[in-house]
Length: 164
Image 1 (cartoon, helix red, strand yellow):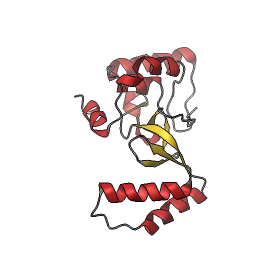
Image 2 (cartoon, rainbow, N blue to C red; image 1 turned 90 degrees about the vertical axis):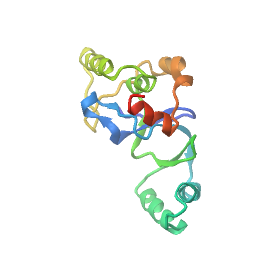
Image 3 (cartoon, one colour; image 1 turned 120 degrees about the horizontal axis):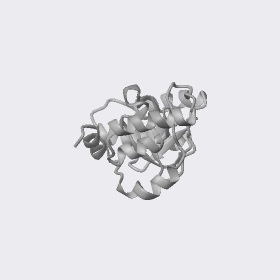
Image 4 (tube, rainbow, N blue to C red; image 1 turned 30 degrees about the horizontal axis):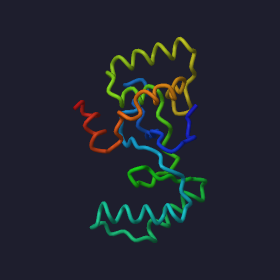
């Protein structure tokens, strides 16, 4: 089951970046930490400010941002703030599972893929609606061990994705 029950400090991954070649382990694209939920008006304001700060030459208005976010919100979308100040939708984000966390902490992906495959078989785990498997059993325990050692800074995550 895809979990979206975020608490402050939880590591979140992009749902669409679960890699089939890595047995559904997230490929570390857009990893972040949850700060808090946002009301629509605050999401619009913060997202607009972040866009203007990150891309000052971008020709975008607050009305453009408001139009897009309101349209999504009318379809039930909710928004969250990350610890790095980004505004994200719940729609394409989920709680990182045990194997995502272990990969982020630096464990070898090849070993993790095999271990996850065995875990799926041994526990008769069904696929989620997106065709991937998730393991949240033991997530709290692994987070206690490695949470402080995991950086979700975009530069650090990208270096990890490249194997550096």
